[in-house]
Image (cartoon, rainbow, N blue to C red):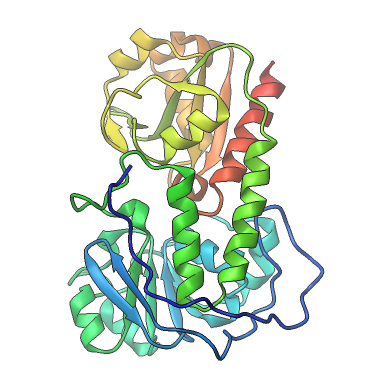
Length: 329
């Protein structure tokens, strides 16, 4: 785990929520989007090595990647999102109505011209690479235009910032940081408590169960390695990652390594551009992988792409994997 934590320079915020909606889910707070309290104090973050100072809560936000969008939806801040981009798949059903009302800027990373046309005051991205001269714009350039930026800390690559390993405490830290930026800290604590309850209720397998986290790739599989979100989720679900000894978040592997390990189950990442069904077809058509125990016995588990990256759906992914394991017996 990182020895240094992003510092929040803020006073205690007194938050009074407006009348709450009665609808809530295990992974979301009430969906009202009341403005931040008048007692909001400025927030300064060290975000992936970039200092971000928020003097007033953002009101015109563009989100890039599903994890960023779903974070704001889970915190009940959908009314502040003026555009979203680079969706990795459908949002959870509980968020669908709110999501449908948000304009889609681009199916991929939006260009800077398209982004600036929306006149945002804040851009929240799931990956550092979303901010580039060829993408939404470099962070320094956007800051010069008085547009705040934030990257999911789990995606930081700079030395001293990349989580090593990623933990659910790190995910909770991001929830708290984002809630502080928007002046709604009490919503963060409610959301974190709900996710902790979900994790506490998960039932792990009674015996060691080895697993391959298969993200993408055909000739060379791209798999979950030992320090990122896949490892964190598999640990919590009681699965033994066959690539846990690889010191990375994800890694390229060889099918011969997978065949040698012969995992008990295969976790398939389900993405719009590379579905779980497509991966099953590849596994069953390949002469080598078709002989894997998990393939012969169809011991497949699935995780939506967005749930496999650090964010508000990780706890739900753990519970889902345990349910799927129980169904497999």
